[in-house]
Amino acid sequence: MAIPESFLQELVEKNDIVDVVGEYVRLTKRSGSNRFGLCPFHSEKTPSFSVSPDKQIYHCFGCGKGGGVINFIMEIENLSFPEAVEFLAKRVGMTMPEQEDSREAKKRRRLLDLNRDAAKFFYSCLSKPEGKPALDYMQRRQITPHTAKRFGLGYAPDTWDSLINAMHALGYSEYEMFDAGLVRKGKNGGHYDTFRNRLMFPVIDVRGDVIGFSGRILGDGEPKYMNSPETMVFNKSRNLFALNLAKKSKSGHIILAEGNVDVVMMHQAGFDGAVASLGTSLTPEQARLISHYTNEVIIAYDNDGAGKKASQRAIGLLEKLDLKVKVLSMSGAKDPDEYIKTKGADAFRNLIDKSENHIDYQLQRVTDKYDLSVDEQKVAFLKEASDMVAHLPGGVERQVYAMRVASMAGVGSDVVSQEVERRRKRLVRTAQRADEKNTAHPERQLQPKEKELRYDDPESAAAEEGVIRILYLDQGLCRGKELPPPEIFSSPALARIYSVLKGKFENGDIISMASMSAALLPQEAALLASVLQKPEALRNGDKALADYIERIRNRHELKQSDGDLRQLANRLKETKGYEG
Image (cartoon, rainbow, N blue to C red; front, side):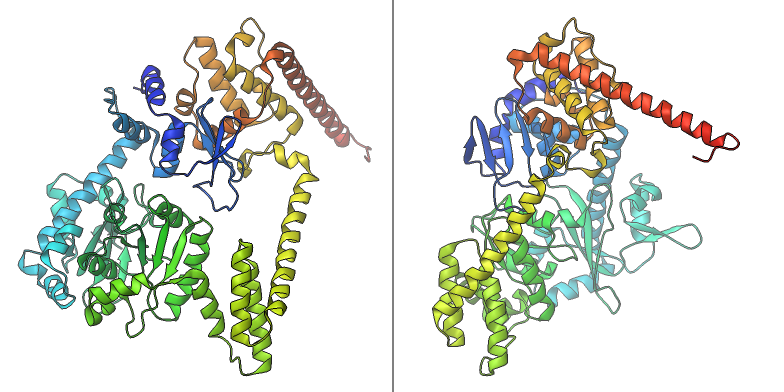
């Protein structure tokens, strides 16, 4: 049974989109009644993310994401439609109506329950004789029982079927365990435990659900860390280890580390804003997730070549989100865990307070590559450093760091400043040429951002958008009119949106973004939001609607006649003696 439309309507009325989006995005710039901010779904410097309080929709002119408040929560929290509805209902204290869960929702809930029970099993193994290897390891690493309980650490026994047997006893099938990534298929058709002889770290999302696991090997063998595979509930590029705890930190920053043990030890030492990516370099999705909870990030990656390279990548992703980024320089220790153990928590806290901003860190990285006493290397340094400074967005920043570069190389500051501005102008010209290229092809502006939704006939699609817009915004203009059938729309995506919209109109149902989103795919809801953002003069709505319908019918008839001509030509080609 679907969620009643009356419930959805009340839900969106109580969850004003400006208030909900404002909890994730800083909305400051205004354009008419619309609010603008930096898009949370892609990296950008200039706000292109629009929220309309009048229409209760959002739309990004950069990446094309859009929809209503339910779509926003689905996208930002990585939830299904029913889960997003439940999320918003809890936000305003509404009780969800009784309904039958969809097959997908049931399966998702089942996997989350299975992960939770698996985490309990792993934790229980710590107190059993077979858990001694894990306890010995935690003792060596100085992980306390309190910390182990706080993180839900556990032990995967060094056997082939301990977890399988334990979960069987709770009623789970091996197929469900396989779907959760907890078991693997054997050569003879059976299954065996994925994690064996490993210290287990449950991966818990910001809603408190166990979505996967990360296991550290306790003996010899590879890989050192093993993560759950991608599942219906686990996507490692969109989650961070310990963010469920770090999001509650009062420190005002997030500390980004490489390893799970580093994170655990930092939390144990009082640095409760620490998180780690899950076996990968920081991803754009993880960077945006971090930006939901803080304006400042401190990178505390390992003090080796790989760690420095990963720091550079993380800086690039985080600064695009307008976050304040600092980098720890841990001399005398390879990682945060070793630093805290050898020098103490107070020394680590002092290190955080004195951490370099990311520009200083990047400049030092460039400096370390060159011997400035050699003229050829000094020239190479000046070129690379000037290029780095040219990419800084603020004029004051560029001037300050240009002077710093000049001082380091022992040359006049005006020389470096001129080189920086020359390179800056080149960057600006490149960006302008890209804008001019787009402006020279206005049909590109009419196309949806999603490639699979692109219009084959932009002229007809523009009229199809117009019919959808008028029907959504003012159903009174459409009453008594002979609306075109969806089958003659040139765009399958617009035909799908129009079919749902027309059905609701003819049945007298509530028409809102919430009710539409319940029947549309996310990319279709985004396309609808894009269509609704475009202006429409409803005071001339009767004439506009008639013109749109006429254009759609004309384009359809033209297409049909073209098809007939092609069929005739093909038949003639098959006639003996026809040479074309």
